[in-house]
Image (cartoon, rainbow, N blue to C red; front, top):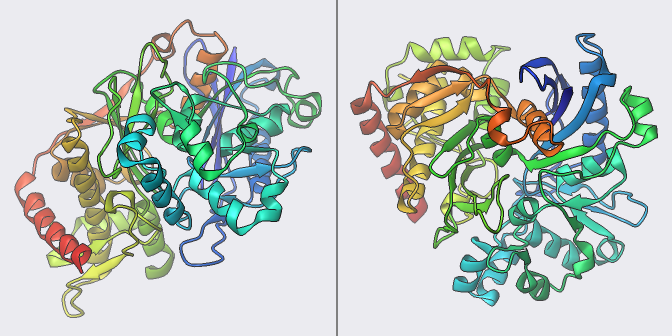
Length: 493
């Protein structure tokens, strides 16, 4: 049987078809070729159209079907991975009421902070494992107060993956994992948080039906099947936020295992069997894909909004049509430490590791007589790697001490320079694998549909590409400490 995985990213949609027998990718396609639009009506705001996602999902599926490498009629299950923390609201006719307020939007921070204080720090952390912060519940509170007419029409709220599943199947469902990433889930009582609903004044009817993450979330309708050349009745058997799904795609399912991504945003994600939380909510804990009340598996997530987006910004604005390989080659000619140039990649909204402060991207010690494009290219990648180190140290404070980190060979991990900076800054080896989010979603669909008897069976053919060990610790440590001193000075101003 073939499995279809869909990864609903911020920049684009990727679809992959995986053979369940070999667990190998048969074909993949991405749509669109250019980065999808993010609307920012005010500073700190970020929105995308859910209908745009749906159109791009359809085009990605048609594009992968058009490769001719398989028979679309042999696809037996669909899995969805999606950008986390977004808010989608629809009316009773399943019509979208407003653009989605996405993960990097900062407007709801005050609403989350007020809820944290009102519910109580200890109760919030012990039951929600997080402050409501800038997550989906707080975003809905913003809509309730600022767009009451829209709020009055809401039938159901959804995460982005729930919305795509609805468009495929006509069914609206969610999971404990999805609700936990929106800060709607009470881990102590294993139910939707009554504290959150009561504080914000949300009706429980707004929450979709909660189903196990690995289960049927509806079946593809005849109309959609005909348009996409699929069989009607195929189950959407898996839905997960992109970071838990990335961990799944790297076979990170057991306590102590850790995954990393470095795309538009950057994440280190470690699995624990304890309901752990950071007292300042600088790192966040969500239900992992294999979470169950009697076998608790949570993902401790350190997120940085500004990582790959900074590298992309430099490419778009400070080069003349250079590609990333050319930028990396130029940067490799500059010594570790970028000749004193230090860059903070924090220009993409409020950063959780800084208690949801917005400090912006910054250049420090730029010297017009010494520094070139190549220095900027290197300093950006070093700054991103140093930010990972800063966040990982917070995770270490909370008991997460990885011996190795798994990552997909994608995005910034395609750069040997960045990978070298990452392992030497963090002092942790990295194992690289070929799997990506869409492949992970496809394998998740196989688990949810019962094609695989267990998650372990889904990864029997899992192969490591290479291991990168720290080999140049001293110069990176010196550069990191200098970078960190500048950061702390900036934070204290």
